[in-house]
View 1: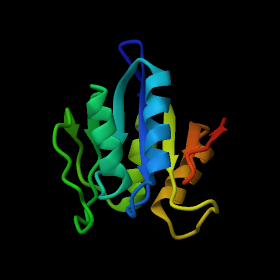
View 2 (view 1 turned 90 degrees about the horizontal axis):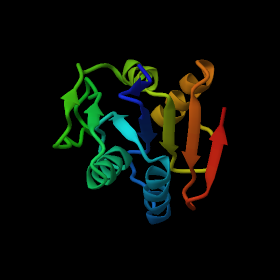
View 3 (view 1 turned 45 degrees about the horizontal axis):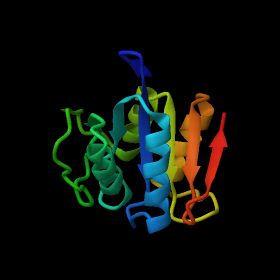
Length: 145
């Protein structure tokens, strides 16, 4: 499902290392510009997911969590309207992408990595032709599709 009640459903992926201040500021601007976001999906990891969750709640955007089966780095964010079943990391990323029309990604660097959940999720979004917005560590944006 990509849209609910006439609004946009977004997904999110980002580094467990956490976002930069520039990434968070750009995220705030992007969410404000998007306007009618009716749901935001993320994986509930420490770092970028937790920061995304906080910014969404500040903007009263309903959040849905797709938790990991491995709870080692889980943030246990509060205030979500729905918590989906726990999945392994690859299936978790795919569920987030499948649920959204736009994937927002905040990687921890400027180059694509092979062993990275963030980049695995981005590659899956590309494969199924989702719109993608990458927010680089310096806060600049790259739009795909």
